[in-house]
Each structure stands twice: as C-alpha cells, then as structure tokens.
Length: 156
Length: 266
Image 1 (cartoon, rainbow over the protein chains, first blue to last red):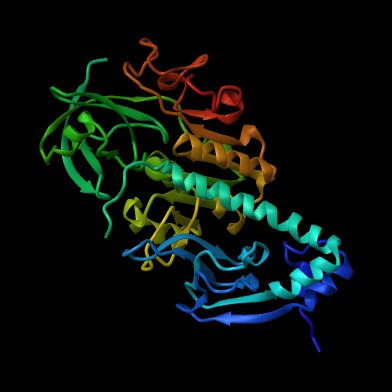
Image 2 (tube, rainbow over the protein chains, first blue to last red; image 1 turned 45 degrees about the horizontal axis):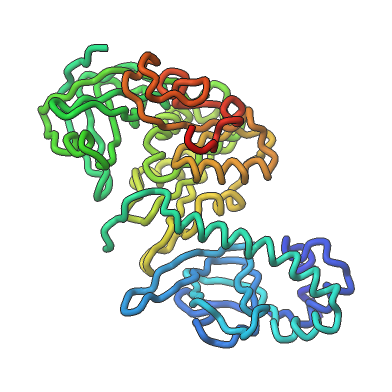
C-alpha cells in the first residue's frame, strides 16, 4: 500500500527529518479534502489535528461580537494550518474555512503529542519547525495591527 | 521654480479616498519621478506621476485625500486649473532590469509610483525574465488599478499577487502581509531586481525577506518620502542623512541608504 511517507518527506515542514521520526509521523497522517465553504475547524472545538495544505486556500477567521466574521490570514499550498494541538487546553482559537477546494494531509495531534512524550527528540524536532511558523505569524499579526496603510476604509 | 498652469482633463475616482487627476498638456517624465502640484490658495504637494511615460497628452497623478492640499485637489473638476512644477527626482532603474527577473512590491498607494515602471517594462516585455507584482493593501476597498491586473496577467504574463490586511467572507483572495506572497511566486533571487514602494515599515520587512532569499542590496530599490518643499534640493526640508529626497531620490538603491534606512528621527 502506498503511504504518505514520500509526500511528507518532500514537504518543507518535514524536510530532513530523520527516517525514524518520519515513520512515527506517518503513522499519525491521513489525506483529507474540504470543499469550498466547509469549515476545517471551529473556534472552541478540540484541537486534535494540524494540517499540511497540499492544494487550495484556507481562511482563518475571527468573529467579533455581533459582527460579521473577519478573515485575518489565508494559508495556501505548502503552508501549515494550526498549532493549538500543541498548547493546552488544546482548543482551536479561531475558525478555519476552506475558501476553495482544499486538499491537505491531516496529522493527528493527540497521537503526535503521545509520541513526542515518549520520544523527546521528535518533540524537539517538531517544535523547532513549528516555532518559526508561529513567530512569522505573530510578526505578521503585529504588522497588520500597525495598520501601515493608513486610514480606515468604510466597511461595505 | 514657477508653476506652470495646467487644466484638469479628467478626474477618476480610484477608491473611497483616492483619485487620479489627469492633466492636459502631457510632458516627458521617467518612472518614479514626481511633480509638485499647487492647489491655488491652499498650497503645494509632491505627487508621483502614475501614468504611462509613453503616453503623450495627459499627465496622471494618483492622489490620496489626506491633508488640506490633497483635499483641495479632490475638489477640482474638469477644466479647473492647477499649478505644476516638475518632473523632479530620480527614476526606477528600468535599464538595469534587462535580462533579469523583476519583482515589484507595492503597499497601499505605493502602487501609483510603480505603475509607470510597470508600463515601461511591459512596453519591451521580451527584454525581461519573470515580472512579478506583489501588492498589499488595507482592505479590498483600498486596492488601486484592479481593472488592469487581468490585462497584465493575461497579455504580458505578469505574476500579479494581491493581499489585504483583513477582509470579510466575500473576499476570495489572500489575506496577510505582502511578504507572505513571496514564496508563492516564481523568480530567481540571484538574478532579480526588486523595486519596493510603500510605508517604510513594509519596505523594511520586505527587504529582510528578500535578503533571506539571497537578494543583494544593490539589486533592491526603494522610494523614500519626507516633507518635500522646494523639490530641487535648496530648502533642506527633505534632507535624509547626506541626501535630499527630492533631488537624490525619491528612488534609491538600498545599498546607498542601507546605513540610514530605518534610523528613527532622521
């Protein structure tokens, strides 16, 4: 049976991960597909997965009280979606919705957490790959907060 | 130094706060240069030329309504008169782009000074490799020249990628800062030249990303803005370290301004 190992090995997130660790990861991976408009996850739900997007686009949204949802970020091919599976209490902080047909590999976060607990080397590898992504995401959020392009457009 | 009188031929509203003033009479200019526009009785402001340098007969200026003078300019109608001095300043390095991939990064109204460079590049499309336009704006309502993107993509093979800082569900494009678009386009950083125009903080982060991809400082060009008054390097209002933005800029090689770029209160 064809496994996801070669695909994961080629993905920038897992590139150069040693074979033993890659095999552990493959055991927690599966293909998924989301049609346009379908939610990948909703705020408050248990965060027991994360996703490597292979094709398509996903919008990360937040819903202000009594307001329409606001898209804060979109993620596309080659990018990683979700890191709440690593942070207690393991609940999603935002909604994620497929903007177009999206294919991804889902990784079972619960399964990975257990494997990381047993093998701290794997835990270190995963964290050292995720932290730069989290850092970039925070940097981008701060830049967006600066509102560098100036005055607010009227909402429409 | 004396403004020349020009008549407004047409006013085109681009966004809720931005419009393009087209002035009769045309004139020769280089991509990246600016004119001083004088709203009579109110004052004078530097405004980048935003049209096609090869177009004779009309001078385009895309203006954002942010102050007293630009507010007065918004009130001009067809046939109104405006004072014009210029063109002034340095130009985008179009000749240096020959044989290279060209990456244009624009933020907000920063697309206006880059548009003449785009027209010039497209006029001789075969001379260049990939042409990439990465454009970030606050919201979809703030995007300029959207009607031209499809032509640039379809007819000239320009990789146009647009992103906004936030959006509602009706928006199917990208959301995020402009630098997030860089991994999504094809170009060879070692054989590319980049022109960036936007708020300084946006240019600073863009430069960091470009350098992390292997781009040399000498192949990165930026535009700078300061309070320009005389536009010919006499008054010193726009002094930036050893340079005057009006005369030595507004387009600079990053290599030239690297040591003072991002210095606070300079």
